[in-house]
Amino acid sequence: MKLRLSLPVIVEGRYDRIKLDSLLDTLIITTEGFGLFNDPEKREYIKKVCRDGVIVATDSDGAGNMIRAHLRGLLPPESIINVYIPQVKGKEKRKSAPSAEGFLGVEGTDAKTLYELFLPYAGGQIKRCTLDRGRLYSLGLSGGENSAEKRAQLCRIAGLPQNITAKALWQAIETTYDAQGAEELLKRFAEGCE
Image (cartoon, rainbow, N blue to C red):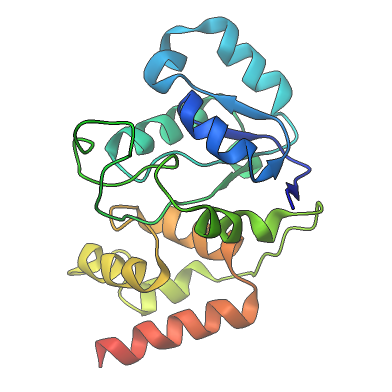
């Protein structure tokens, strides 16, 4: 059964859209990779359609991060919910070689994982926890020595891309976990650091 979402979803390409269209009942918009950067009509369309909120699900690589950054320049940052695809090494079936960074994208991620990533946003009810950003600092995840390595460790535990910023990690935890799930995640991380 498809998940009904009240917000549109933005992905990079048509094969990503095809994959998600089999799982989600919502408008799915493609950026055509970096094509969005040079397409004023598409940018205006996204501003209009996504003004009340959007879920962004780009690949978990450098290109995906650039597209997310571009979208943050188009839309109010508070209207964007980022869904992060786990960084799994591999190659999409239709491609002859892996991506530049060697990770599967939206298209290559299994349906069960994608379904679970979008499940918190089904039915218009978005589960969010409130996480004090100072908590990330106190755990050494931002603004300190080796904080990038510590973030990467937490991201591995959470199944998030290991190259995200402290702010992106904070947003991902707030929009992906309820309060209990966030506490369990941070506890697992803290226990692993001792």
